[in-house]
Length: 96
Image 1 (cartoon, rainbow, N blue to C red):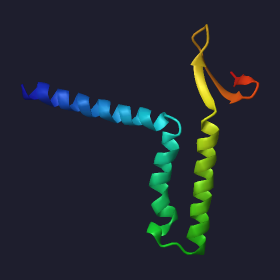
Image 2 (image 1 turned 30 degrees about the horizontal axis):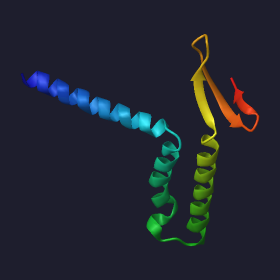
Image 3 (image 1 turned 90 degrees about the horizontal axis):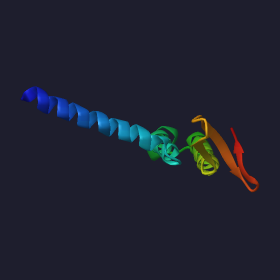
Image 4 (image 1 turned 180 degrees about the vertical axis):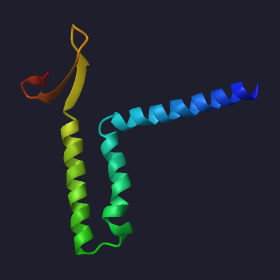
């Protein structure tokens, strides 16, 4: 019986990690996670001098731009089953 319990626990942990990985792919969650991981490094744990302030501002700009642009991207399957990626514009969905 311990093997079955261990296998169930391992399976649950594996599914948790897989779900977390899928969550990171959702837009803009991946960017937010990246910001949360990088901001302490860029800001020197909140002790900002002029260099770390510029680095943190750059990180905020890059992450903000990433969130903005990723809000307009999407993927879908065409009639052949191929995955197509595109970008939403005022004239419709552009991409292949």
